[in-house]
Length: 172
Image (cartoon, rainbow, N blue to C red; front, side, top):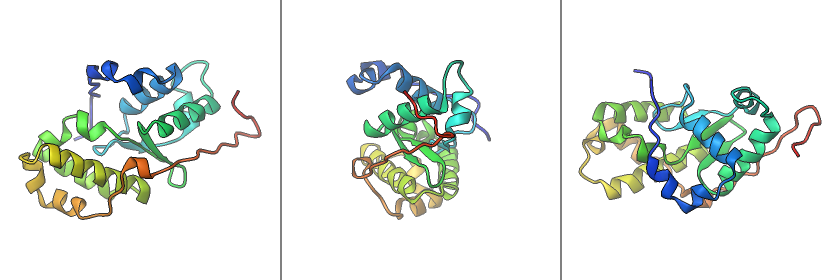
C-alpha cells in the first residue's frame, strides 16, 4: 500500500535545533517528509532540480544549500552517489513501526536503499527505537530481524559534503 499522507509531529516546534534552521532548510525538510515517493524507511530520491520545481522562486542551488544545512544538523542524510536522502526521524515519528504490517513494508523498503551510508543510519535508528520501545510486535517480524543484523552507524559519524555544478551556476 502506498503512503497517502505525511505525519508531521507538531512537537517539532519545541525542538530548538529545528527552530534554528533557516526557512529554506525547514521548507526542504517538509518537502522531503511529504514527498509522494518517500518510502517506509523515510528515503526518497534526491534530485535538487525536481525539488526546486515544487516551489516558485526556488533554484536547485537553493535546494543544495538547504540540503547541506539539513545534513550538517543531522536532520537528513544525503548520498549524492546514489541520489538518495534519508529523513532521519521518519521511522521514529511516522508510526510505521507501531503497525506490524507497515514494519514489514519498511523492512522491504530497506532492501531498495542503494546507499550503504543511509542503510547503516537506518539500522542505527531502528536499533535506537527498539531500545526505547522493546515490546513492539515489529521486532518479532523475520524481515525486521534481518534488517537489524545489518551494519549500523550513528548519523553523527557520517559526514556529507554536497557538491553541485548546475551549468556553472553557483548558489548565492
